[in-house]
Structures are given as C-alpha cells and as structure tokens.
Image 1 (cartoon, one colour):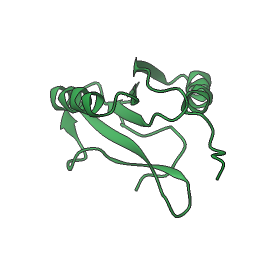
Image 2: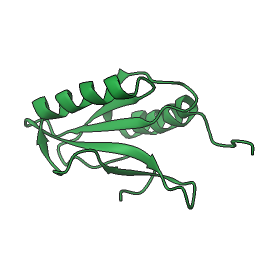
Image 3: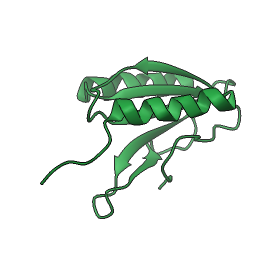
Image 4: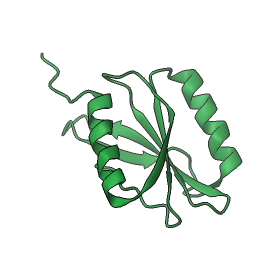
Length: 113
C-alpha cells in the first residue's frame, strides 16, 4: 500500500507561511523527521500559561487532528517545557512549534478532538 501523505516538513512549511501572512508569531523549537514526524504545538498565552496540543491521525479517516497532550487544558509554561523535553526523548522524530497567542487558539489545519 502506497503512502500518499504529504511529508511533515512540506505540510508545516505551508502552515507556517499562512501564519506569516496573518502576522502570527511562531518559533520552531525543534525540527523533527522531515517526512513522517508528528507535530507538538505549544500555544503560549504570554502570561505564564500554555496549551499543548499533539498532532494525531484518525486511523479511520486518515485525517490529522489535534488533542491535548496533557490532561489539563492550560498548564504553566515550565510544566509545558518539561513535557516537551520528555516527549522529544520518547520520539526523536517529533517537531515542536511554539505559537504566541494571548487567546491560545490553534491556527493550524486540523480539528481539535
């Protein structure tokens, strides 16, 4: 069975270009595996709290979406950074993107589950 999915790096490049066009600030904390790495999204509210969203695939529909990486919706930035460090240790292919948004909205493609 052929894998027709768009490589992560190409998908992310398109997503980040849209952010640039909308004036949304982001930082690529870590570049993962360019073809198949998943994305961990840190939404920084700039007031000490963050949301962490993990990219995941719905195996029935093959669509990518987002889920909370931690049981809590909001966490202190220190806790978010500690989780990111552990996640990268477990999955060296992981991409980590930080977006600065006081409302902590996810501007990337894919529904939140």
